[in-house]
Image (cartoon, rainbow, N blue to C red; front, side, top):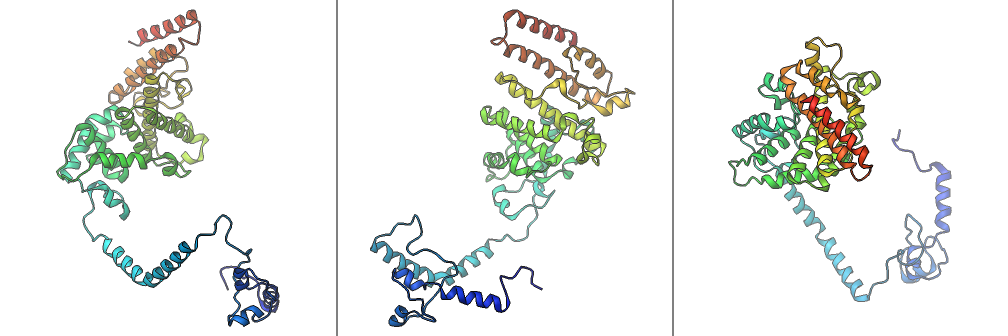
Length: 399
């Protein structure tokens, strides 16, 4: 049985085809723009010229295709000669191109430690430059967790301390971006003199777009970590409109996934029902990185925040609070006046997350000041004074 439907069969199909052929004008008469007597198997004009009638598979009107003007005779003759030359050399050119394609295939060689966590396409290997030496990778990974992860915590302190080789479980794209950005920020010099660090980072930034990488689905944890790391790097190294737009996209993506309500997401969204508690904690870190990026970008530009901190249902540090016996996790209060009480709960919680949570509270206080200062041209002076005093009193209570 055929895998595709047939286009008419049996005697009826043959009769129909013969009828259509008998009413068709041959291609020779169409090209010559003369009247055809529809003779079969050959019309009168073709018989006089000793030609056989030919019929194209699709019917078309006489003359050139619409939009293609008639070219001068010299150009037409030159094109005909070029077509003949191309036809004569097609076989030899195909043979040469096939041999070149085979010779370009790389021979088997050890895969770089940077990309050994997942298979990499052959087409990308040439753009990645030389392999990073094992000792270089170990040094850069150690420096990342010592400095950069403190500034943008994508990995928990407990996970870093408990695993000596945490990057072995990560996606290769995240590992590469992590190591290269660390090398750039530290001014690290690779052993290979042909390693184009700036060019490779620029290529990663230009190739990373949220729409294409996610393809309509939820991005993986490592892919979202990569987004955050690249946006963080671009915002600090190249502040401007493009970095601001990237941060806006990543905030929208976080809202689309529901990262702002991770404490209740498993009960309302089937996509999250099978996520483990450990991965849920990692996603919380991602959300608070997005919160920081939204704060940094809009505080520096004086624009409204995309994240409303009063409507966040993702806790600061769930594990530490449960170990201390708290009935409910710590969350940002709906009223900024509740920040001092939140600070007391954070101080009584886990020491490993103390600085992380205090930093979030500090950012939230700064957001209040930033919001008040952006209103100075929009609201009466008396109302603005009250707002600033409330923000100042809240900061005093937190301190």
